[in-house]
Length: 408
Ligand code: PLP
Image (cartoon, rainbow, N blue to C red; front, side):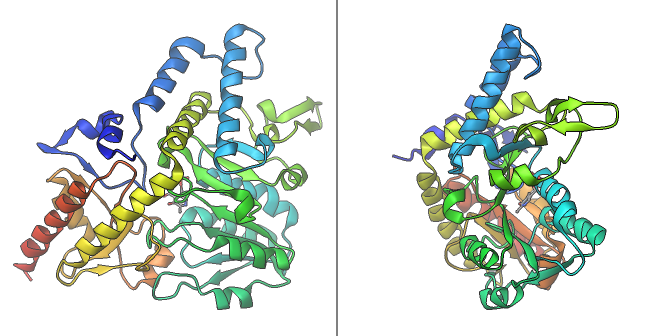
């Protein structure tokens, strides 16, 4: 039984007030709040076990190393990987994609090669590929987004061909709430001998993910969006592909032997973990994964889908509102606009009522341009949000609509 009241009690921050009102936190696509279990895991690490990992033979170093590697196993299991050898800890989705663009891209891309992205990519899955193609002479192609927020798969069939070396796509959109059929894109990529990278920043926290079922070669996500601490995320890659890649950063645990003029590399995944890693944060992410698994990702998805549908229906009742993205199969994200109300003004007005939403381009400038607007407002829900919070949000939006409408 999914008991949202009980879940909320485990998130200390949800008990606070903002501007004298109970906090209604609807900015989860930017970052999630943290349950007591994750906060306690960080505290316990620093109070009881803290030491640098791998290099020490003393008790604390062994305990820290074991906890860090156990976190790696947990995250690998959480995304359905066969084992943890392909699971690299990074600072987050952005760093994970940069790792692939640099370490795989520079080695494998040549003039005439193509990388296929979509019009709905977050800058984190666009800019690294711009840099990689500019450095190698390869070029970018883009699968268009249809007016309903879904990808044009016919166009994808046409674009993905013998020149394609990699297809990279968001699993779920941080603006449109679309869940993309990345499994189908992976098939198209593989039929043409290309690799498939999935940006899972907005899927791993919200949907059951199985990298083997998706059939992707790389999967990237951020810990802080899935109840974990900031400063940690991961890249999963097919082990045989990671083996063939050059390192990303040099120094620290990524080496096997160092000579004055050359070095050799450690085994994967350590080859990609240079310098002292975010050890406590990785352990905190392990605790977050435990928490999500205890709730069950199917239940999390069901809760968010129910809440998302309710929010979509309630917000649609606001006069003249435009809601972006598909009507069905959405995640718990609502991007919208009201005539005569600038998204920043709306965010500010809602903040006065203790309601946290986001406004702007959401790090998706090309997509926002494609929608024909300068910005949107965005409410994003997570496993601890309630129908009462949706009601408070819609009531505040309605009041803002009336307030600004009076000046129009
Ligand atoms: N990709 C998507 C779809 C996102 O929503 C985000 C963050 O908003 C990112 C990538 C980047 O995540 P991070 O800043 O944690 O690296």
